[in-house]
Image (cartoon, rainbow, N blue to C red; front, side, top):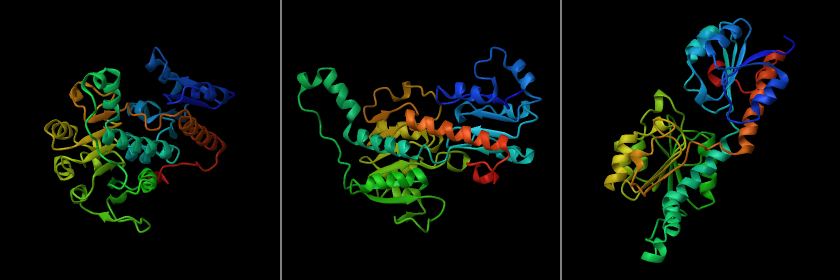
Length: 316
């Protein structure tokens, strides 16, 4: 093969496949009619695969004995078996910084939309209810309020900077205090929830943070509180969240991620106090292009024998 072979599983940017085909011999797993046959042909020669996290299949690691590199065009990588990768010497790269700005923008947009009931208000105008019923009910202020951030990583920091422009008082919760963070730290998440108006979930996914926002935390946030999740659906106990929204024990929510995706809209039916978006925090052409270009650089560095630009910390 004149060009280095790779397995293309999927991407979150439409031009990625064509760009990869210009540089590599691509085994296109995404579009293959007979995937087992494709894998049988790829197995002896494919040392690298290219995918977004949502399309990752654990069985691929076993199906590719020559595999040395997994290129993820995503920030998260909790669905990949790191212990198995480490044991086999497989390296994994991600896109840790490219998504930060867009995801923080969406988190703040969801805060605004949930507090000011923007999606409900648009329906109110379009349905003619404004004409029939009159002035809409009052909503909640955002500026000058208190924001608690769950997970002060790059996205949490970016959200805090945006909140400062709205004169919000920021605090944070995480596994440990960060020496360089200028915000109050809460070791107990429920204690922080009791002290804030908005709770933004920006932490990593995976077992360590599964249902970190549970019924106790939502109860502490209270009937005027608003929770926003742009992290992973697993970070919030969705059953407890839905119950609190229906019972009026939580004020509102803005969600971009769900316990199962694509999300079933049925559980949210009739809830005007929740704003829903389809897991598209990084969903701008600018960011998806940047994510995939970082993936391309990782592939090129691998085949050139150079250090990988964004090797995940656990495998360094």
